[in-house]
Image 1 (cartoon, rainbow, N blue to C red):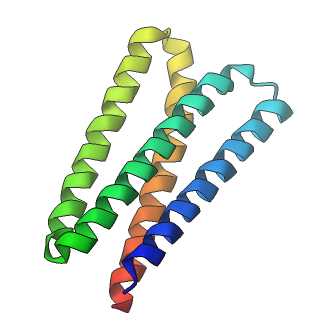
Image 2 (cartoon, one colour):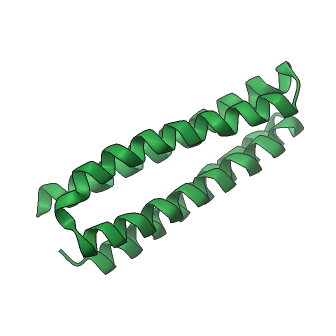
Amino acid sequence: MDIDRQYRRFIRQGLCLVAALTLIGLLVMRVWYLDEMLVPLIVSAVYALVVYIAYGLVWHRVAKRSPEQQPTFFTAVSGFRLLLSLAVMFVYYLVVDGASFLTFFLVFAAYYIAMMTHQSVFFARLFNRS
């Protein structure tokens, strides 16, 4: 398995996924005049980009240096991603009022579910091939 090539493919797919979700969100925002979606879209997109880049960099390093530790890595990253998303939602909840939080939660949940699905499918295919 070529780790460097798979790493670049993972990052590229992640960036495309985030861009597609953001464009869909902007389209929904413009079609239904939901201007309150802009900040949730920005926060969710930044969160997704940071998580994708960090996840990719750390996975690349673990896969290169100690491939036998990858199952532990995947478990740890899943827990960390959940805790980080809860922290982001908590901070957003403290900053805005309750009505705005529902919009943020729905947008953020869409990004989170899409990220989890992509990462699960990507690595399942990657390791089933090997």
